[in-house]
Amino acid sequence: MSIRHLVVDLGGVLFRFDHAHRLKRLAAAFSLSPDQVDELLWSSGFSGDCDRGRYASAAQVRTAIAAATGFDGDDERLDTEWCSAFHPDQAVLDELRRHRGSLTLTVFTNNGPLEEEALPRLHPGAFDGFGHLLFSHRLRHRKPEPAAFAAATDRLGAAAHEVVFIDDSPANVDAARAFGWTAFHFRGPETVTQALHP
Image (spheres, rainbow, N blue to C red):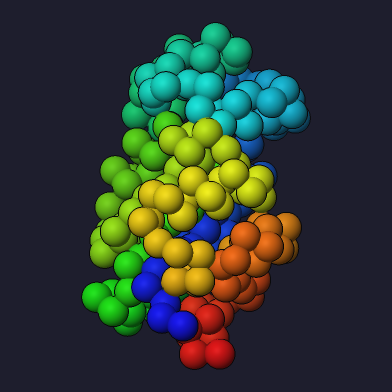
């Protein structure tokens, strides 16, 4: 079978992901405790709503965050602190670049419009060479929902057997396999090579 698309998760694969670090940064910006920030913006379901497309733009997300937390700073600081959980993994980027041109590279992530707008601006080099950036808020479904994989496959214009997928979540890997994608649990940069040369 011909593989045409290499699809990777963002947080936990393409980027190292540190939610606790983000909570501390946001807590300092909001003059709240990390636990309060987590309750207001994650445990409350707000972040999940962002991922599912409840908010149509990054501006709407910023307004909602300010209303929930009392933040009165500028957009640049909010974007920086909100995205501070994400740090590009250079070893993974280097491995992916080896396959640029031979495959269509795609990011498939559970994230909302603020991340979609801010991360490419904050880390422009990390997204070079990617043909598609599939953010869940545009698909209206999150991994591991089967509908998310159906929507992603449709956006790629691919058949399921043409897709190789790498994610750090076992649940997402299992869901991708159930949909018909070839999927691998991310263990490190070497997973990219293993996925394409099993």
